[in-house]
Amino acid sequence: MARRRSGSEVFGELETYLASSVRARVSLEVLEREAERRGREAVRCALQAHLDCRAGRDFGPALELKSDEATLRLSHKRLHTRRLISIAGEVSVTRYGYGARGQACIHPMDAELRLPARTYSYEFGRRLVRFVICGPFDEAIATMEEMTGVAIPKRSAEQIVIEAAEDFANFYATRAQAPAMPRDGEILVGAIDCKGIPMVKPDGARRVVRRRKGEKANKKKMATVAAVFSQPPRRRSPQQVLDSLFASAESAPPRRERRDRPTKRRVWASLTSSKDAFIADVRAEMCRRDPHHQHTWVMVTDGERALQRRVAASFAGVTLVLDLLHVTEKLWRAAHALHKEGSPEAQAFVYERAERILNGQVSQVVKGLRQMVTKRRLTGTKAETLRSVAAYFYANRERMRYDLYLAKGWPIASGSVEGACKNLVRDRFERSGMRWSPPMAEALLQLRATYLSGDLDEYWAAHIEADQQRLYRNVDWRVARR
Image (cartoon, rainbow, N blue to C red; front, side):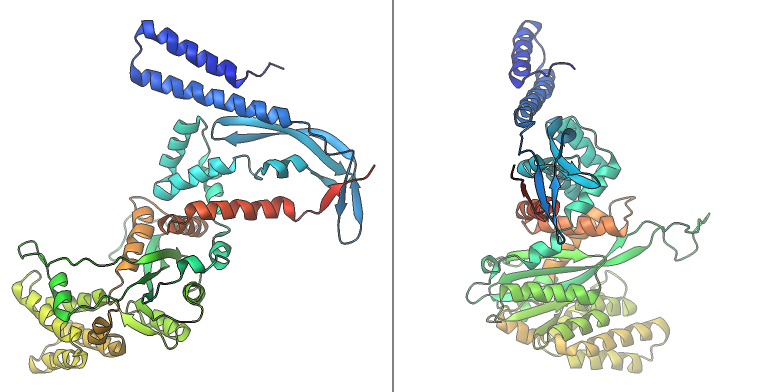
């Protein structure tokens, strides 16, 4: 067996190389790459030397393993070696295993070193996960290989990501509520929306030579997205909102007021949870922050009836606000049924009705849209569009009291959750050519949510603790007496 070099020997070789490069006038980029490679090897050798020093630690002649029925004596003691991929490269860990006939071995040194079950170390996994959260798998794998010198198979990388997310629900369910509680005077805001994720085609999917009209290259599955945060009340007038909505490049920009940003924001999403279960998680998060309901709660949603019914059932007594951006989209749809897109008439149509809605005159807008159909004797698509917009406003009129919401300083648009849909879902899941399986999409949604909520490092520490509990602490053993 070849003698293992020490870290000091490899580092000495690095110093010798750098000294000899002076006369050769080696360029800086070559020096950087070679110094990094040799330095990483020095670190790997030093790490291996440390593990070798701890190799063969004898915990005693035997271990006693407790079970429900009896105590089992593990007296078959053998040295076993396992490989481990660290951020410095591949190392090996030699330690004693204690076993008995028909019984799996127990390695006390694994628990002492807090080793994972997989070949890749926790730190290697953490860095890989961080890269995968921000960019495609192929790029993340290439970056890890450049940084560590280790080429990880894509399937292994995907499995690491899936396993890394398994403690997501428990992490947020057991988190202490005190750091996230709203400050005095703040309101607690929840926002829920949906966003599609392109999915891989199921096995046996029919191949077509050319798609028919209306058919798409891939099918999306809707992920439910939520944001929960605290913010001080921000009172505004309807005119201020209109100035913000209709600001253009040609017009003078509205004077920007200094305002407090939302605080303690948490965003997350789920593809596999039912909407009822997901909304229950949103309520649990808000209860965790304000268990005695001492602050005002506001829920902002879009106009999907099924989603609103579920939210209303789970948040009885909580003000539900229809996102103003969905309202204006409906107004633009009605305007374009009557006027050319981009025309001053279309903008005036939307402006006038948005002003009425913001001043609490939803019923008048509904009545006006219906009268247009009758008085102008509209038929076909135009009549259908105006009637559907009027019906939408009428069905949501109780959630469109914007004059009251503005006076109280409550939010009237789900900008936070819309941003979550963009940052959490679209920026990562809807890149060109990307298709997702449900398990991978769910795991990456959860990990990306911890990253965007600023909780990734805290979550990773909790994940390691939970993984160690599953691996070692549920096994009750002790050193046997002689």
